[in-house]
Length: 116
Image (cartoon, rainbow, N blue to C red):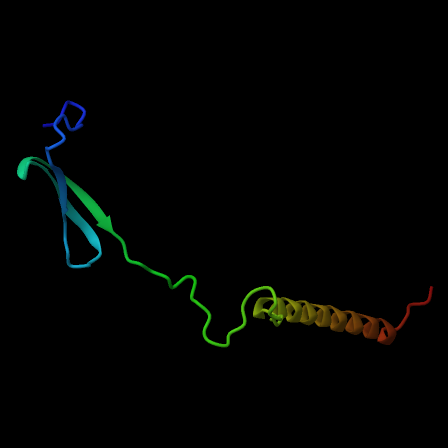
């Protein structure tokens, strides 16, 4: 027998808890039933749910055979496409301003000066 706190009052008494839920190894939310047996007689049960999540390791793949990893590996610096696009845009703008300035200087030499 058990007392109010669930402790055995008789050492010969056997208490067993069984937990039953989906055994199909599928992900999802499953109903769970907890059974309490005293002297192999079920005297109470509780209902609940358990969520089984997918075991996903795609974010941190393991290195392959012969792959270098860790601090002893030399990494190559890769210039991103965004950085090279920014630099080429600045160069095009600078060339445009220079051409406009050269045209302005050329026109000022060709234009006759009015003498007063």
